Structures are given as structure tokens and as C-alpha cells.
Image (cartoon, rainbow, N blue to C red; front, side, top):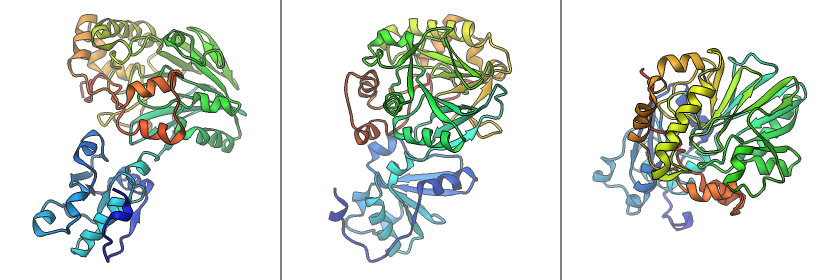
Length: 396
């Protein structure tokens, strides 16, 4: 339904930006949300947080006004934040509620605007050359990393939606983007490596991922296991860590931080079924167990683990980033102490739904299909679901 087709309430309604809403949630303010999207969209993904109360009443319930029965289903707020997909329906619903005497505002640009919130924090636990920054996309839990040393910079696991942001931030930090690296063929978001490569940044993909059918492998650089590149004085070494995918490759930055992609998170481990399917998932989980115990957990305990995703079960570190040390994860994540077969059983026991549109996203990231920027943005809306479970695997 087009916004022009909605009845126009007499009451005008103030709005709140997605960034301001995120700030309030981060600062622990009590936030009450009315999500006016269809129930199926709400159930797939919605605004969450420890201080967030959220209710779902679809916008079409308000087309004939708001009677007492309907108002009884709408929570009170201080004020109530009404949202929808793009901001049109929420403005109509909020106006209707304001006419009924409710204290309301609506979210500008809706969940599409929420998906464009992108935050950056320095990883203070990194003690190698230069600095490392973590980018966070709260709507999907995607994480990327900017490595800066001197006048050079590199980005690991960039998102196409924010390709310009990385270059601009590097410039603000006095550096020029030299490399854009993917850890693997992503299934939950459209990679920004090719977009950056088109702008003169040197795109890099793992050599181990090429056999999956990467169509542009001859255009970008490839890093095999043990290969390195330099960003100023900082080295980035490829560490093949298969399991989530056959090509999954972590990057050891400055011998201090390991960007683990989707192999190991701070609250869980990778799901092994997106490339291999249900039949191949047990063997992939065994491979993941080997990668964890032979390639990652053998690193010094103070090595910072910097994953490509976080979930609602994850706790942020003191610097606000979703990172943890190898020693900390070894101590508190029960899954990492299991023998191989017990690990496989645990990983396969509670698999979440596969990421939305994952086959189309994989095809786009392989280069076998093409989408424009708007289509790419729509494809990746929603949760990432790249972990083996939606709950924490730690013993906390």
C-alpha cells in the first residue's frame, strides 16, 4: 500500500532518527516500540535491546480508526515509538494514535533506516602496529574491521552498503584505503570488496574460496594460507580456518588480533550447513572443530578474537566492541572444551533458520548474479543467523 493511499490524520507527529533511537537504547533508556509491519516481517526481525519493550500491531488494523479494543493492544510509551518498513505507515499509525490521546513519535525511514545505522569503535585490546576499528550494524549484527597504520588502511569483511564510508573514514584518519579483504563467501550480506576494487582499492579474496566458483577471482588478489600483506608496519596474515565454509579464512593482524569471519564468535561458533547442506553439515562441523583447536585456540591467550557477527546473546567488551581474547573464550565457552563428536552434536542440535535470501546473496558474492545497490540493500535486510545457535554457547 502506498503512503498516499493512507487516510490522513489531523494530528501531526514528531519523528525520531534511527541513530537517536539507537543512542537511547545504548544509554539504557526505557524504550517502548509499536511495530506496525505485518506479523511475518516482525517475527523475522525487529528492534531489540535489554531496555526495549516491543509490540506488533499491523498498520492495516488502524485503517478504520482506533477503537477501544485496538487501543488496548497498544502499549503506552514515554513516548511510544511507532515504526514500519519505510516510515510511511508508521506516520499514519502514529497520527491515528495521537488523535486518540497517545504520546507518540514515529521512526524516520522505518526499519530500512534502522538497517543503515553503522557504528565504529576502536578495538583497544589490539596492541600491534597502528590501530584497528570495529564497525557494527545493529540491525543484522554484521561486523567489519578497519586497519590503519600511517597513511595506509585496509578493511576486512566490508559491506557494499557502506563502501564509501570506509574510504571516507580512512581519509579522516589520514590514510588511503589500500586493501579490501573478505574472509569467505558471505551468505548474509552483499560484500563490498568488488565495489571498493572498482574504486581503486585492491580487492582480496582467500585462495581457498576460489574453487567455490568466485567469478572475479582473476580480477582481485588471492591470499593463500600463510600469505601476508602489509598495511604500513602492520602485517595481515591469512590463516585458513574451514568449517563454516570450505574457503573460510581468518586474518591475523599485527600478530595481535585474529579476524575470524564466521568461524568463531564471542558467544558462539559457526554454523556448518550453508555451503555443505544438511547432509554435509556433520563433516563440516568436524572440520570446524579441527580449525578451532589447531589454528585458532593455539594462538597466544591475549590474541584478540574479532568476529564478523554478533548476536543478542553477545556481551560487548569494555571498549564497546564485540571482541574477546582467545584465553577468555577458551575459559568461558563450553563448546570449545568438547571433544570432536560432542562438539558436532552440540553444533547441529539447535540450528537457527538460514539467513534470509542466502542463496541469492551467495550468488551475488560469487559474481554469478548481479543486483544494483537498491536490490542489494533489500536482499540483506533481516538477521544474519550465521552462528550455530541463536543462544550463547558460553557457560555464563
